[in-house]
Image: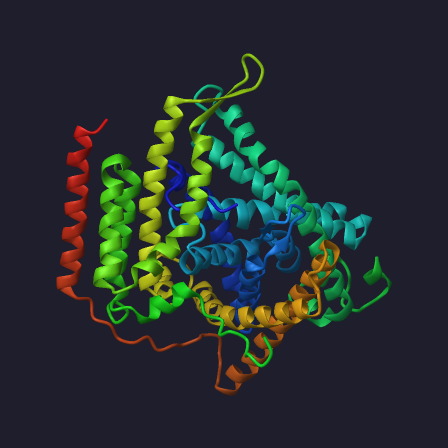
Length: 231
Length: 259
């Protein structure tokens, strides 16, 4: 779902960067405040970021036999919160460009907007909305819809940049959307299931780690393993 | 493969970034050259400028920095493959007026050509920068564009930690594969979930150990690191500037003769 280097026209690249900057500023301020209050938070956030980078590089199996990568937006947003995730996601995307030649520098703003801002916020919103239905359900919808939202935004970005010569934006949206819809919906479901497995394991075995990143507050689970933990 | 140790988690791009002929130079020189070429590739008409940028960037990386041509092409191959797969969709148009109909469009083909050239040239710049400059030398530069100090420190730490986590991920994956953990879709999801959960726990454990180690050395919230002193070479800056002017002027001049 990365838009590759140089693919977007210069104006679009600049505009998406401008849209992403305010979110990054808010996230960076929050990180600066957290690390002033708690110097150790820096180490925690760096580990979280390294984890996010590796997570995005893991191949997930797909029904068609081909492999793809999880966006990790759902897990990241649920574990670390969406505003911090914007900054961590931006760093991960920068590293992917510089270490894996995946994505790009001119398209960094557009990719940050879809993968580090919209994806995590949609995932977090779904998580909070679906939380009363149970932890597993909430995590599933957060990860699945976060993944789909990311992909829809990328599609929209491409359609805006390259409207169809005959049918304009709507045609381009159908054209770009149609290509991925077949592969992307099963992948989103798989990412949803995968994230449920991860969160269930963490709730069961790594309660302290979850408390440390503030997951207990965000999920309303409470600091101790109680009856709510199995919900 | 019994007895073989887990591979050293090293990314090919990172290896060349640390070992090319430019790695002793001031990173600012490379940022001027590559950043300038990238900008030219993106804003000037692609048909005339993009091939120039591609040639100059390849020559600079391979001849001057001494990165093997094969490594440069390998780095370009994957994104270029995605690019080639995506371009046909730009050249086609979807018409709803008489039922949905997909047809070749001349306007679209022109856009596809421009985008393809621009993107390929820009990718060569990204590959050139990535193959000649370690990430840890670029990150401190983020400070100059207004990124707050704590975020820069986190990014630097992330760069150092991600190889450790990658090593654990490779070892874990191999152990799971040896136990047929990826035999079916259902098992694959379960195995991958276990792997991710384990990596999360280990990452945090590492953070705690780092904290203890740093606290023992008087950590008060700022991570101070030594960066080797590098002098900005006037000659090389001038050469980079001259290259940019030459490429820009030639691109513009050629652009007049091309459609």
